[in-house]
Amino acid sequence: MEQQDLNPQRKRAVAMIKERFGIEFTKIEPGAVTAEWPLREGDKNVHGIPYGGILFTLADSAAGLALGTLSSSVITISSSSNFLYGSLDAQRLICHARVRRAGNSIGFISAEVYDDREHLLSTFEFVFGRKK
Image 1 (cartoon, one colour):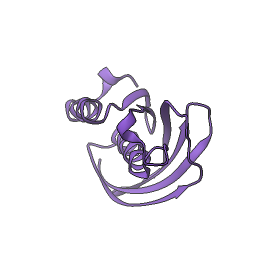
Image 2 (image 1 turned 180 degrees about the vertical axis):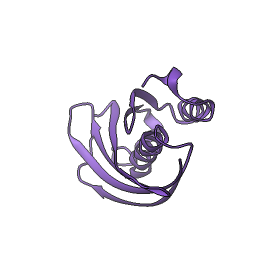
Image 3 (image 1 turned 120 degrees about the horizontal axis):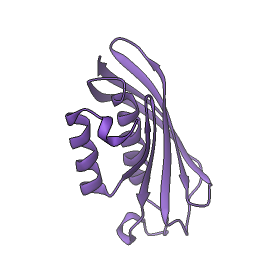
Image 4 (image 1 turned 135 degrees about the vertical axis):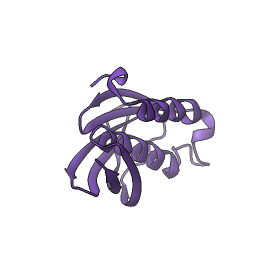
């Protein structure tokens, strides 16, 4: 699924997320998305590692779009996260999100965030509300 195949609402969301956060959606398929966040100096905490909120925002955006490829409207209901590794020299974060189950009213999505050296930084599980 290419970006041009997305519905107008989803295209606007992708454009807004890119403008606001710099997130680039590099792969969009039905139920699966890869997204990247090019890190800027302000994206790192006092220890020089990306803020946890940056990782969460990237994962939430990718997870929402992954389910959004199967739904007309989605909204985050809940999430859980595991922060496994802090990356000092990362220039880019990469997130892979995949729909695990898309029910009638909710969807379950998993996401993993890596640095540009393929270190697994965090894992996420999301529950989203959805409309078909």
